[in-house]
Amino acid sequence: MAPYDDDSDSSGDEQAEYTETSVLLGYASKDADDDTISKLGGQPDWLDPSAAPSSALAKCKLCKDVMVLLLQLNGELPDRFPGHERRLYVFSCKKKSCRRREGSVRVLRGVRIAPGSKAVGAKKEAREEKPVPKETPKPQSNLGEALFGAKGLGSASGSANPFATSSSAASNPFTTSSNPFSSPAKAEAEPSESSSAEAAVKSVDEAVKDLPKSFAETLSLNNTQVASDPPPPPEPWPAEKDLPAPYPVSYLADADYETLEPTPPPVSQATARMDIDDSTGGGKEDREVFESSMDADFQKFADRLAQNPEQVIRYEFGGQPLLYSKTDAVGEALGGNRGIPRCDNCGSKRTFEVQMTPNAIAELEAEELSLEGMDWGTIIVAVCDSDCQARGVSEGEAGYLEEWSGVQWEELTSRR
Image (cartoon, rainbow, N blue to C red; front, side, top):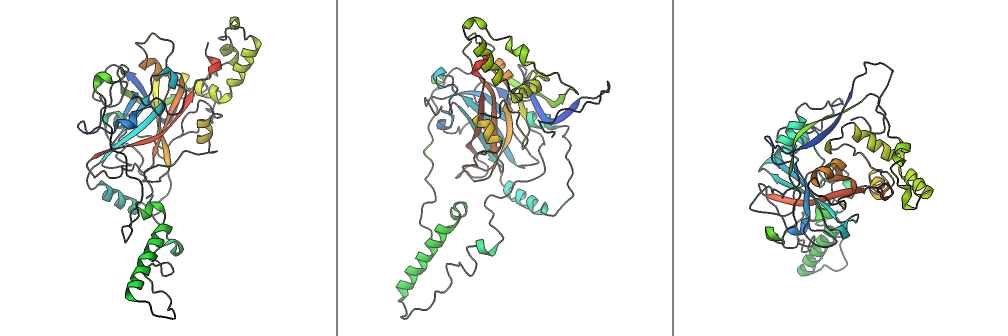
């Protein structure tokens, strides 16, 4: 896709065409058409209606109450993850005391892997090891239908195996130099059989401790250590009457690739500053603070959304999110200064998949008259690049894992 920092080319030709990017935009509608999975608001629809995940995964980390659903997205990518039934869920706490605080927005990834799909994926990766000429992929014409209608989409590249060991002999725990079963050097006195057995077991335990954690957890050879703490027992969901009132449902039945004008008009800082109310007493000081917050990143964010103002989500697995700011914690993480945390379950890197835009707030709060609503600029979702399954979940069963959510909040100085 074209970088977000790259301005559209303009040669002065009046017949310049619109630019189509590889970002898929989702639009809200009260009509579901054929897809009732992807939606804003309502109650979550789990992959297996008879086996909901632990309610602990959907509780606010601050007040510990169950949160409300903002987005449920059909995330099936059959070309990238064949046999994987995927859904994303974005939750938010409705309490005013929890807003603008980390932990008030959480994201879940649900996945159910059809039996045999992992083996198929492994064979596919083996075939793709042969070098092939690199070509710039063109946007698939059926991407929107696939994302919102559960048909084929995604790139053909598979994810790297997070448990793969290095080909270097130095890192192989079973090479001659580090083989726990190799014969020890002869001592002055021949040890007894029992002593030799104890020494061998001790050698195995020490070797296992030195292995990378992800590999050691899969090794069951004389390893009596507990690899990790067992997951806590699932917490039941409260009765429906005890759940917070959900937002009204809008379906994401409409989707299309983003198109951009050849020369989009910029957002004027001078025009934006006219919205500041001088009667509040701040006067010149307030205007200066607001002007400093209206940096180039926010202008680019506003300009980009203004070209397709009704969009509620932006989707591109492995793409780049549109940042509200590059100077807050989320902007710095995505800019590479800190980085997004790796998957807690398998250790794979996380990659961007989808983000929510401010127009989603207007859709979700359309029936609410209160002015004290949600005030985020965007919610960015990054997921496990390998689409791993939760530990202890068998093929054919649904599992749920928490993924990374980066919330960029509205500038307080821009609110009247």
